[in-house]
Length: 320
Image (cartoon, rainbow, N blue to C red; front, side, top):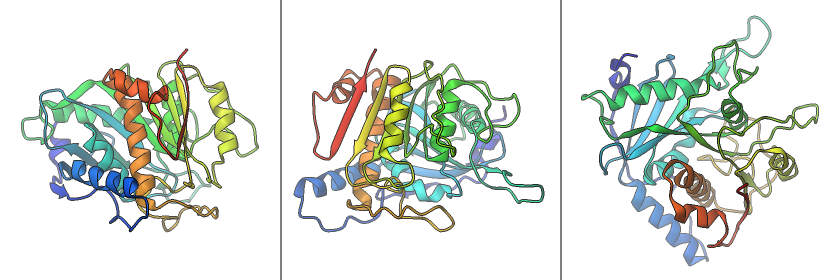
């Protein structure tokens, strides 16, 4: 593991806001939450680096804190979706006290001669952990001695969310991984994924073993690509602890910086919430899950238990 990979192409940027500029809203509380999240994200920096596997990745991290403060979150992109479309989500989550790594990973999934395309892999999880561990030990890195290298979370969207679930199971499973090279890191302690289920293209529900780490499915209530019904089926067979967090009015692209990014599969189901609301809530509740299981925050567990409820968010949480 070479620490030089962390500082190659270092370009430090100050993020002034997490997502798109807020639109006007009749809901003053909703507008206040967006403003609050933007203030948190003003203390987040982002730089681009090369991971140990050669992937280009954007790394979002807080600019405040103490030694070993920040667990790492490996975010696995949706199919054909560039890492830049998750910048709002990543900045917001980083503002909650995490090092969030969003990589562009290319694979060939078509017939011979098909060029590599943006399809992530379970193997990205290993590369993220190795790279952030090296950064934490590198005096030249902005992450020097601030990363909690003992606690790793995995997040993802759609195809990337399924890859994240297989990374918890610990098996190298095509098309999310090729070859017997993936090993689940012992530091992997939680997963929170959006627009994700394990119903395959033939309509068969695949039963993954997720007993190694708690899993939360974040689900848009009007997702037309990865439907709420399929998320409910998947939730039913996950091992505990587990959560199904349904966000009102979000479709498949509620987590992204814009609806239906170019080159991706569009969701024809209209979203009834503002895009910045989706970015804020998906990051907030992913953060709640990671706070509970990576930071041992009992207050976060209370939120999952619905001891503190929120309009527009429905939580089904099973501890054991």
